[in-house]
Image (cartoon, rainbow, N blue to C red; front, side, top):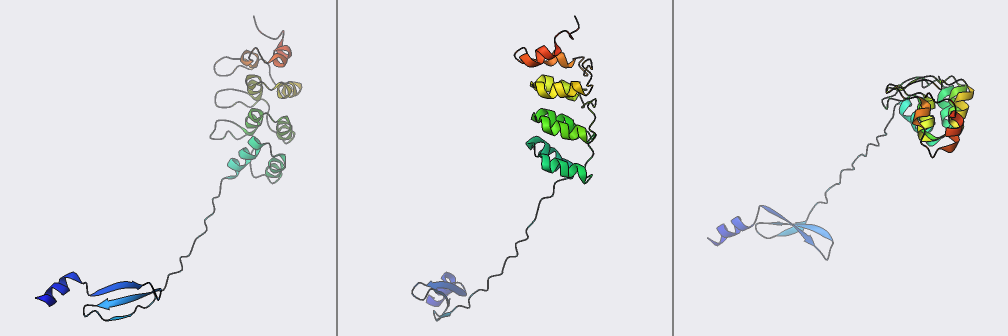
Amino acid sequence: MGSDLWSLLLPTVIHLLDPAAGQGMVARKDLTLWPARPRQRRRRRLSYRSVHFPNDVLFLDHIRQGDLEQVGRFIRTRKVSLDTIHPSGLAALHEAVLSGSLECVKLLVKHGADIHQRDEAGWTALHMACSDGYPDIARYLISLGADRDAANDDGDLPSDLIAPDFKELVELFQGTRVA
């Protein structure tokens, strides 16, 4: 009966740790000990995965950051189309205006971006410059012939979107508001 009790209490093989030796020991039911074979650790192969973003996503990110060197590189290598309306609903020029970078706007226009292009809501780059308070960009776009009377899908003109505290823009459009 005593041996039956041991067979219930002890599994066939027990793994023990010999703290003095710092190695594993194995015990059988008969309580004899011997050193355990060290387990070979499988060298886990780490697969380094890299994330690849589409060119237009990277391009728009460079525009938002105002990274003129990278924007120019994308344009020169023809990796992107300047007039594409991206999933954000905006074209590259719209993104440049919203970032407030006059230099980026100039670079895009120099390489053929359409200053009259509309986003999904009918906004032109001039609408955005007026709405966000960028008088230098608005002045530049007007100097290139941007339409001051272009209405967006809601019927708003660029001048309708100017907040009263944008004094420079108010002065730029003074006398052009329709009564």
